[in-house]
Structure formats: C-alpha cells, structure tokens
Image 1 (tube, helix red, strand yellow):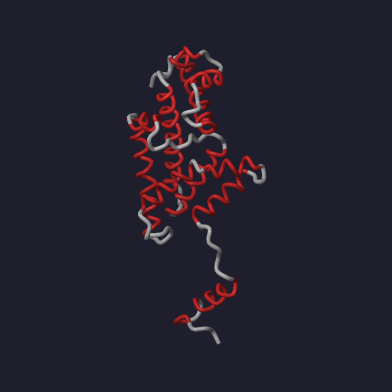
Image 2 (cartoon, helix red, strand yellow):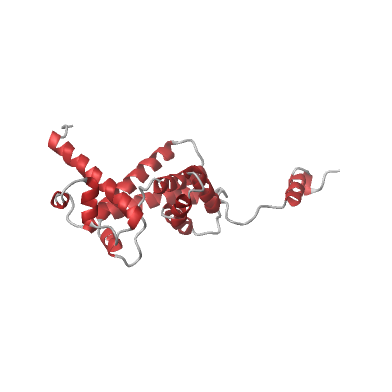
Length: 223
C-alpha cells in the first residue's frame, strides 16, 4: 500500500480539524446558526482554504455526520465481537452516544423539513452508513426482544428511533449545564430513564411476597 505523501497527510489533518470543529459547532449551535466564517475561524484557516475542502455548509455538515457514523460503526464492530447479550450491546451503544454528546461531539439531529436533512438524504455516503448502523442496531434489538430483554410488544423501529433520539437528547445538555452532576452520573440517570422507565418500583412488601411465592412450588406460600 502506497504511503500518503506529506501534502496528503497535511490535507487530511486539516480536514479532520475542520470536521471536528463542525461537529462541535453543530452540537452547540445547530446547523442554521453555524456559519462558514465561524468554522474557518475556529480551525484557524482562511475561508477560501476551507472551500478547497468543502464546497458548501451542507457538504460540511454531511461530512461531519458521516464521520460520526464511522465512529459509531467502529464502536458497534467492537461490541459485536464482545461476549455480551443483545441487550448489553444495545445498552453499550446508547451509553456511548450519550458520552459522545456530553463531550460536545454529537451533532443534533436535523429537523424533518430542514435544508440539512435534504442535503443528508442526497448524500449517498451518509445514507449508506445510516442504513448499515440501523441494520446492526435493529438486529440486536430484535434479538433482545425475542429473549424478553426488551419489550416485544413495541415495534423494533420504535426502540431504534428512541435510541437515535437519545443520542441527541437535549436533557443531557441541560443537566450538564446545571453543574449539579458529573457526566457519568448524567449518563447513568439517562440510561435509567431509557431502559427502566419513569414508573416507581414494586412496593417493598409486595416485592418480598412475590419473591417468596416464586421460590415455593406452584407459587404457594411457604409454611
């Protein structure tokens, strides 16, 4: 394999810096508020130099989203090789997306009728990677539903879209900005609301009765 030239390495490093800046600005401000001038200034290059890499703001955002999807697919590949249940893999994916968002590296999902969404739908690399990601996660979700680890009454796509929503949940940012909780505590609380729900647990007395009945033949109370 031919080693990239020094110039190619410099260009690649600059592109990575540009996309890292775009991801952060998309997470902080959203697509509509982000400007090309801000990206160029954040990277420390002239706007004309930026346009040598990306022709428009839409192309910039699409490339940034593709980079995030590449990171997500790499993470899922590691999880696929792990000796873990389907639910554990799904939970690991959800946790990772929340951690990435709290680090300011997860762009917000585009609105249904936004210019960004139109640009993304027209970007073949983005749609292909999103489909690949959805197929992997969707397969784990169905597997977890069949084993009873996730609610089998819910359509699998509802669970999938819920996980996508959690990746850009504004509650994470609100909790972080409050300064009341460290990042890992925020992740744990959001994981609980996602997978355990908001309902209270079984009352202690009832829980003890259920355990006793389950441990005796035919559910009869022990003498």
